[in-house]
Image 1 (cartoon, helix red, strand yellow):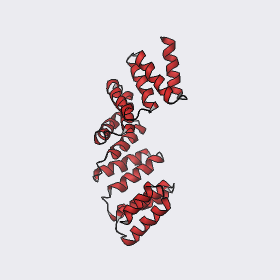
Image 2: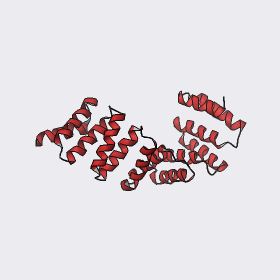
Image 3: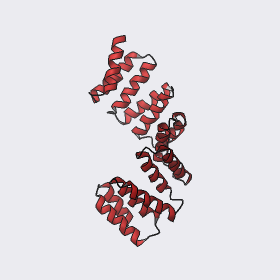
Image 4: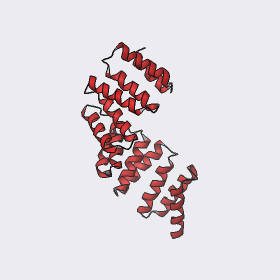
Length: 217
């Protein structure tokens, strides 16, 4: 088996030490292969060595300036450190270099939300769910972003699809409840808050919203 493939297999098993060894072997066998550097960087990031991971991603870009996955990995790393403006630039670079994946659109959308640019995030989150219709979390974040931009009917549609994909997504039920309350559909809102609490009894926001709704009925 190819050393990169072997390393990825070890990563999927959570065997970081063997994964690192496999990617190191891949680099020694072919020092001009950017994929091995990206993979090694992903292992380092997974075990918390982000500083060294960044160097491996940058090395991959030195070898191949069109290594789109390296820009994406840098974006993830920067996002995890709340460096959102830089993360945005990296995800945009990944797209320019041809990484047309649902994950790239999703992460760029999330980054724009963190930068208080929710309306700009909408088309990226929309594209994310178009490319991967079965991603419940992408549906949730898209629905949430729609709701924050007062596109309530569209938000309800996405959040409903989210709970079809993930029936125990308590936050999706809670936000569905908020959306129904916004439309003054109190019965449906209460049902959604109750469902959120059934799944997660300590869901503070759902509990508070349920009490408020019961007081005004």
